[in-house]
Image 1: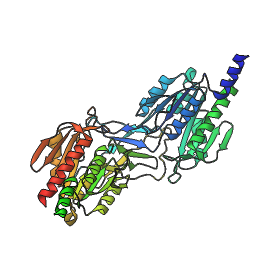
Image 2: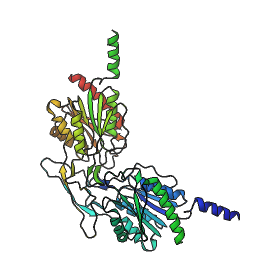
Image 3: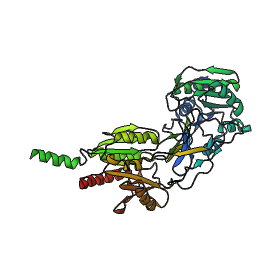
Image 4: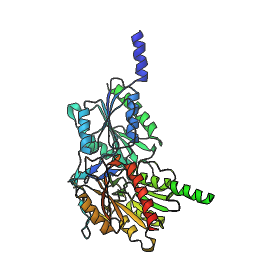
Length: 233
Length: 233
């Protein structure tokens, strides 16, 4: 009876107890040479908030984070990386997991050759062109991880046009379960900002969420994850 | 007599009173598209410390800073910019100045065309190549500012090889008065780190400074600037 009460208590406050969560967050930096790199405007706020929300619900949470000024969330194991290749290695090492949330803005491409010395500007010499090569696709990789595939794989789609159409196509192409699509057009203030306007794209269709803080998106998503893992188990 | 005493007092504590100083700091971010950009590993620590040291000595100080997590120094007017072109415009607007210290790691090149929409990855499509074009050379521009040229123009040379040789050539090529040459090879921890190992290159030759904190480099440089402006006036 006491045991049941305890289980009920922890079931309410820690609906993700016993669950392993893997979250990616932040940008990746892709070196051009020892001092220059390609980056993107992800602040890491959304991913860090999601990791914190999952941990607060009792999940054993690993956060794989690119360079960001966000502090490490309490109760979360954080693995700091710089490049997409390092992030992918850290994610593979983080398996098995029950749920994976890929909130990082992973660079699609990296410079094909990172120069060992700083590339010098020379008078009268044309600027170099930077040849790119494709980075590992972490969301697709986790979705296709076979026996190691998390039961629930969630991605983000940062789009500047045709938001839901692109996100729906992305969900199918990547093989993940849910996509949170958000509009990062200049002027929306999403990248680097505090708020987020998202659409949850799943096999069931598209849900438009009202504009809310990234913190609220994290809480809402964590509740959805808890409900889905309970339903499916 | 009292006036003389006051002047002596402020002359000691504020050797740069009445002097206008222009300092650049931090990296620049050069957009590839609305979410991606080319950046570099400058933390802004050295430039911000120099601006603070000049202001503490009484200089009216304008700091033109790229994106950095460094707080705005007390007593300094700060103009925040992102790209090299914005930095150059802010510096021109900051003239006239008696002394200019170019500590920013200005990108030598920017993408020739910044895309208006996020560049999409498409299956089976080769990654794009990023064509670059030359950015304005702020150190050379300030050194060649004609009547508006600051009396003392100081640049930094971040090098990973042939440090003093490259810095000496840079001083002549840019037309500036002093170059502080620092070794940013991977492993030295200079970019993003707390310490700096610099060499002061001037028409008089090369001075090797001992390894010291970026704070100490700033104090030493500010004292040198005060002495030089007094000597030359």
